[in-house]
Image (cartoon, rainbow, N blue to C red; front, side):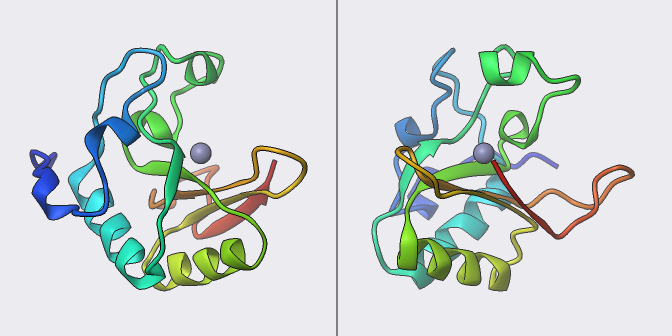
Length: 130
Ligand SMILES: [Zn+2]
């Protein structure tokens, strides 16, 4: 199920952009990265990744009852705002991203994107704000 990552498939991204800020590990999901590269190509602008993989021991994951989408390597937070943020959301929906998180207040504005499947207690596709 977990294909090995071949970073040559993702010419607009570098592994270190996705490394867990807590452990340095990079365990992104290959299908997710294919989807992200397709989105990046359509967006046709730099995408600054403010959070990629988060190890289950990362402080933001460790406080959750179970690790979230970043801990499965199927989520990124992209630093983007305003008109570009809306454009990114529209393209992300077209590319099959199913979880859209919106943080557009103050500093540190970003859009969270993941492609998790629907589960009990977790309808998809969905959108939320922080
Ligand atoms: Zn996120």
